[in-house]
Length: 292
Image 1 (spheres, rainbow, N blue to C red):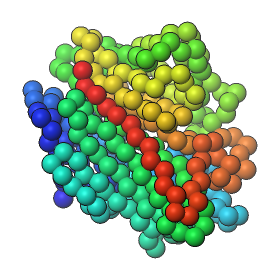
Image 2 (image 1 turned 90 degrees about the vertical axis):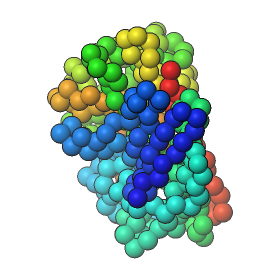
Image 3 (image 1 turned 45 degrees about the vertical axis):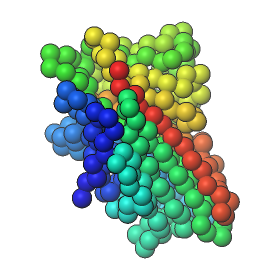
C-alpha cells in the first residue's frame, strides 16, 4: 500500500516495495518522477543497496567466499516495513532475512527516509550495523525524472548544469558493463553544462563522474524550469536513460560505490568507495531535490 506525503502544495507517493518515492506533483499537476512505463523501463526511483551497479560475472566475494547478486543489489526488489510516518515524511526499514543472507552474509538495518520540503524533497539513507562483525556496503540513488516535463518539449531541449565549472572525463561502461579508468569521454571540458541528446546515451549508455567539485546538478528545460539535485557527500554521480529507445526520462544517480572495474580482484571491500561499518556504527547519506 502506497503512503501519501504532503507539504504545502506538494504531494508525493511512496511505496514500501523497494522503499521508493514514486511520484512528486506540484500544484499545477506536473508530475516530476518517471512513471515506470515498461515500454521503456519499468523502474522509477530504486534504492541501490548493498551494491551499486553490476558485479563482474554476477559474483562478489565476502570474507573470501563467492556470492551472487543482481545489478544494484536486492533492496530495490524488497518489501520494506514502515518504521516511522508523518504528514510529510516516511521512513522505510529493511533487515536481513533468509533471502538476503544467501546473497549478502551480514546482519544490517537499512532505512530510507523520504521527507517532503517546501520546494522538493530529500531522501536519506541510514545504514546501521547491528552485528558482531564489520559490515561492508555501497549505497546509491537512481531517481528517474520525466524529461521532457511539459507538452511540446523534447528531450534534446534539456541540459545538465553543474554548480561549478568542471574539467572532467566521464567513465564509460563497456558493452559488458565493466568500467576502466582508461575508457573515458571528455564530457565536461572546462564547462558547467552538458547538452542532452539521446545520441549520447545510445553511444555510451551511462555517464559516470567521480570527484567533481560541484555538489549540485540541475536538469534544466527550455524555459529555465527543472529540478536541482544536491548530492552532498556522494563521491560519484551518474546519468542514464535507456539507450536506443528515445526514452522520455533521465536518471540522476548519486552513488557511494559503482559497478565492477576490469581487472578487479572480486573482493568487495576493495571496490571503489565501499564503506565498512564496525559493530554498532551507523552511516547517514542524503541527497536533495528542489523544483524550480
